[in-house]
Length: 390
Image 1: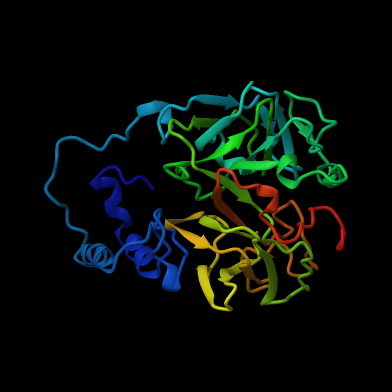
Image 2: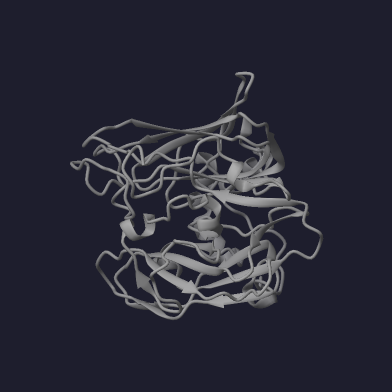
């Protein structure tokens, strides 16, 4: 509903009371000791909640009337971070009214003749009702990632093709994530003196997952890039290697527990954590186990909501010493009690579609500008689409 005038808000007073009392709105699922240590915290204080509840229980009285109505700001052509330095617009892709679509890929040829540092990136999603997620990746010259696919057009790519890599190829030379979009996304610059790097001659690869919703639409989503305007001191990396590729959730299982871990071999700063699961995901906790054995919860989401996949951005970057093991524990409800469960009778594995499942804790880390990102992980991660041990 709109919240732009008293007349529009008043009929929803009871629903507003219920939503804030149960914590459903504003959407903020982090709980526990780390619940309010994030700069994008949307939760209400006890005082704010009490004010809204008291207003609703008093009959939702109107305050001092004003003659004008609220008008949303329209600055920067709708870009929340201001006008981007570069805008990449996707060619129109027509999403059919029904059916299941595989991931679509768009490879934008090298736009940058020199190394470029990006302080922020922002999505402007055109057809939000059918976009499940969008990712943008840097593909450096010579990368094996989708190397045989054409540029400048929407294509499909098999899991095997996406996993194919050259023997001995460096992980971050193959592909690096710039930014992803999913429900709950809010754009934010990474660091005052930190940025992500696009090497000279790199391509930008878009990964788009559309979910038809009953109406045919054509999507022209856009990505805006913002250049760093100060000397960069730290390199920001987004990684998706804290994941469990061996999911095997039994039919009807009410609380399937999945675990993932990785060890950092370099000292880094943790900037953000984004838990990611699909409809059966019910909870996730991400923690650090430091070299001295002490453990610390970084993010705890005891009630995961697929419709609000929040990236939790720390108010202050967390220093993670070399030798720290990062762990993620995820819970899945594949029982009939889960109202969103597409098929309680199915054995569920890792897969692209929302009827499948995933367990990923996306992390954004900052390294010194002269650090070699290939030395970040103590052990090379297994690639999606490859069997165990590969």
